[in-house]
Length: 124
Image (tube, rainbow, N blue to C red; front, top):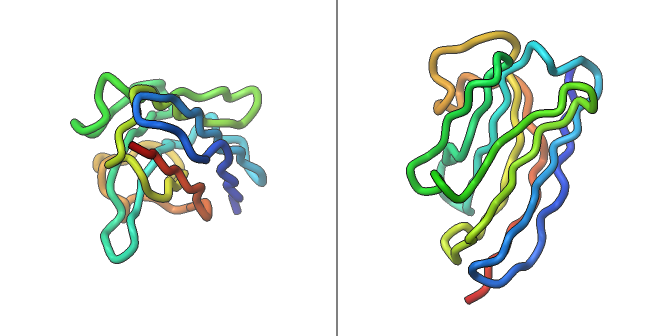
């Protein structure tokens, strides 16, 4: 089993930055694909960014150029640096993991383990 715990959310003004962190325990993440999704109440989980165990990264069009996903295998952590935040980025962000390589990194059904999420609120 893998336990994922997100941190780093909070309240920030539009144009500001936040860095989300996802700490894993139970397994070493070096061979896992990792991703961030976000979910507003009543809506489906929306893909934000993913990073393969090989290091390849993928982004939703809505965050490309503003967000950066990275991983620190030594610390068993995945980060999401969010810059130039917009009010529409406001929601709960979830970290997720899947062992090995999957084809559909943008599909939340592909992932095995999920964190409870961290709230990001961007004010105008």
